[in-house]
Length: 95
Image 1 (spheres, helix red, strand yellow):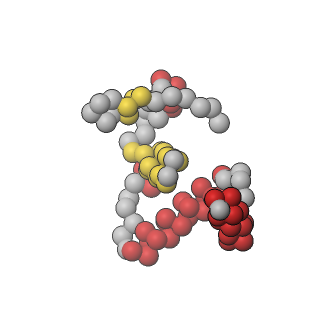
Image 2: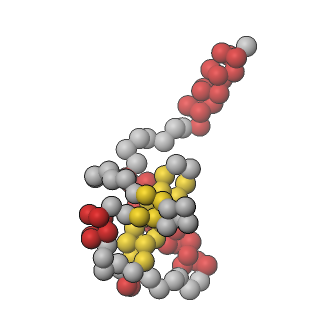
Image 3: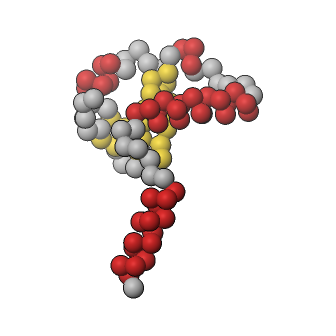
C-alpha cells in the first residue's frame, strides 16, 4: 500500500495527492472512520451511499466495517493478562 502525503488547508480542506485524486475522480462520497491516530477513507459506491434506515442496520454496518478494519491489523491485540502485566511492571518500576 503506497504512502502519500495529503495537505490540509487552514480552512480544513483536504488536498489529496494527484494520483489519488485521479483514482477517485468518479467518486462522489468517502466514508471516513477514525480512532486515536488512525484515519481510514473508503470510497462509497452509489449503492453504498444510501443511509441505513434502522438503528439495527446502522449497528450491523458499523460491525461489518470494524471487522474489515480488524482484518487489516497485522499486530495481535493485547490480552487482558498482558495489559495487567504491563501495568504491574510500570508500577514496580515507579516504586
